[in-house]
Image 1: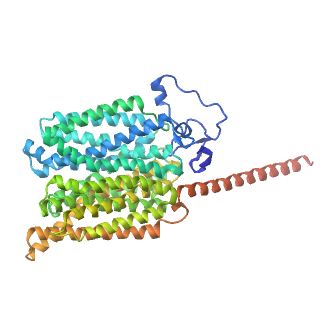
Image 2 (image 1 turned 120 degrees about the vertical axis):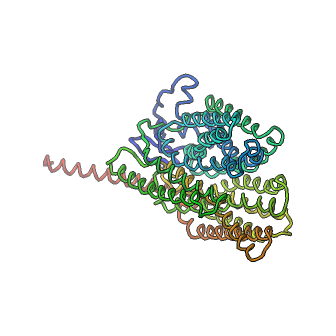
Length: 574
């Protein structure tokens, strides 16, 4: 598909088009007959030269440089997701080696999620200010340094700091990949592209904990970080010699560092409090105080973003908002973000609850627990791909409706589990749930970003990923709190510990099913209108709107010529 088939990507900025990241293309793709600007000579100079849409996507296929660059970004993002979950099986060994408490050792996983939640809001500024290569190479250097530090650390604080650096290095990669996909692919192919990318991302949760457990059993927990060090070095080589830039960096862009501080306090405080709720009662200050400070910081942050963006658009400030929340005024984008966040909330909570049921309540090993969850992870990876293709063909509404129905049905069945339930039936229920997740998460996210202007996609990606990250971080602690509260109430009524815990898990699953039911209603009543159709339909609508704009411009031009002629007649008397 050629560029003139997609006028919605063609916001004009001084005669030049902009890509989905809001950055100007290096040449005007509406004038292919004009000579292109000279390319920089040399191999590395060629890599730094930004690829345009026509350079990246030709005749319905990715060009070789674009394919290689997208493959590198997908691999690095996969590594980030893989790293986040890989250490969970190694925590008991790590706690024993450093002679620390389980609560303290849990911070090796908690700090990763916490840091990523703080990094994502910075994505819009980073992608505007720095080039793709600058962001990715720097991220991989930081990630590799963190892996080396954790691998060789003689003490727990150094290992924790290394883990923090790993999270900093991978925290922005998913939004960068998302923005790149939207800048390369035409609208009619984005669902398929995001489905393929999502398939790779869905594989990481399936193999991360399993491989981490195998490595720990064979060579100790440090071997995990040694492997990540090697992967980090490989990623640096790949990005240095194979990654192209997409879009031009705006070196004049400045960050609102006060907003950066507010985002760290707000999102960091909120997630810190919810992380602690797994180890302490809510009445303990280490739980509720960070939550209160975090909520206050988020409210201040939101108000400042609206004010800063208003001043910027009015021309009274040269500095845009760190996170452009005005995209939330787009109804379709807001609905899509809420649906995706609710699914992330429900999904992340069950990833913790189900292993608790299998291991603590039923007495099975961690290996059996992993095998029970594995088919669902594979199913989600496959359904991500088919969900993306279905989005391009049928539109967001039918795809998301099928996904939310499957998700609700699987969760409702899961809520009936008990002390004597056949253990492999849980695998079947989770299989159904994760097929539904594949038909909801990526298609709804892609549709919601498609509803934005091309220049808003960068901000939209940062907003939706920030909200999803918070939902994922909050989901597990909230559901665990509900489970333990109901279990405590059951034990106070004379129920034994294991049956009481099962009762708590059942009620947490029922609440999750209600959340899924709300998602069905949101899809039915919220995902509608022209932009809920297929991508091809959206292209046809955009073409129709563009033709109307061209006719309007032509009419105004003729009217201007006619007025000029009349004025000339009046002035000359002829």
